[in-house]
Amino acid sequence: MTHGPPVGHGDLCKSGVRAGCVDLLATVQKRVKPKYHVFGHVHSGYGATTDGHTIFVNCSICDTHYKPVNSPEGTTQGDPLAMAMYAIATVPLIEKLQSTNTKQVWYANDATAGGTLLNLKAWWTTLSSSGPSYGYFVNPGKTWLIVKPQHERDAKELFSGTGIELFISNKVKMWTSTILNLSLIAKTQPHAAYCAFVHGDFGLSSFAPYLTHLHIFSPLKMRSGSISFLPSQDVTASVILKGTFSLFQARLGGLALPNPTASASFEYSSSVNITAPLVSCILSQCMDLPHSTFVDQKQAKATIHSLRQQLHSSEIVRLKAILPPAHVRSMDLYSEKGASSWLSVLPISDHGFALHKGAFHDAMCLRYLATTKPTKPLCLRQFFQHRSCTHLPDRWFSICAPNYLRDFTANLLTELPSAYRIHEHQKQRSYDQRVREIEHGSFTPLVFTTSGGMGKCASVTYKRLASVLSTKQEQNYDATIA
Image 1 (cartoon, rainbow, N blue to C red):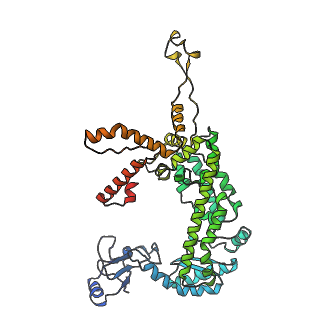
Image 2: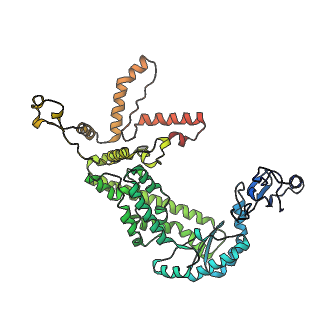
């Protein structure tokens, strides 16, 4: 440990001049050869570098105006062992905090404690006063207090002035405000609002498993009902979206819309089963986790995953039994691999994934067979003379789309694989012989659906093409096939 830096490591001033010492660098690299060299002095050189053997750490907290702008706990860039060493250094602090009669869980510099409100207040006071002596500095802005609803009032009084916020009430308020904003965005940009609602970072699906009191989600449920991604003209589609089908993942034909009031009970019980092996370790405050803990957790996760798949499968079977054949066929189409990729990706305009309001509206209508407003019949009087259109009934002509022929043909094909197979055989009969005998090539029929699915031959071709491209371009196969 020295006051100033060696040349070339954490010594770059704002003027661009290196203020490090050449002799100090020679001493460190040739004579001392330490694992770590810690210094300061050059405030603009904050950070860590290495020469392959020694890690040089400029731990200056203040800037050139002596204002604390850098983390007082140091930096971890370039040093994979920094967090592990920091965790070892916090052990004396953890042992000192055991006198507060709380159950602690630490992960490097992330601390958690559980117990009564009085014990938690004593734990926080001790951590705030004694932490800086061990290099630990608390941050109330990143600290949350989780209490039961009946103790919320006492918690506010006890922790007033500390800067700590109550987790449940404030989180629900934030989620409600976010959903209100999304409901306004959905009117003009439904695709962006949908992706923000499903993939957003407001933590709705992450924290719901740990909350058992469902009544706190009542305002959230009211707000989430105001978001609409489908037109309301079609009653059947509205019933599907308002039911449990909207909770399914996009690859299963659903929308993956989170609903905490419907899933919190199952997710909470799943969380209890998964974390059960850790409960005894937390209560006993053991420093070393036995290997059986990880084995039991892995088995519990596999059981929950299997149970969730069974629930989804049974719910899909139930829905298929009560839905019209057209909606069942739509579910099968959009359950194919890749058929729902447009719905699960982020709407990035540069990659062509962003859909404007009309395109997203049409895509959702096709996905759930929702009908738009009927087109107003067109009067031919404005185009023809009265005599030329007298043979038409009432001189009106309705604009009709060939939906009837399309639906009639689709109804004849009861299963999707049979539709692929029929079209592949038809193309082979039409082109295979000519390609082989005249052009001396090979023919592979590529059959696709309007929903994004593909037949067996097309799937094999795309997988082979992705494998060749990934090898040639030295990319991952998953990224290439996507």
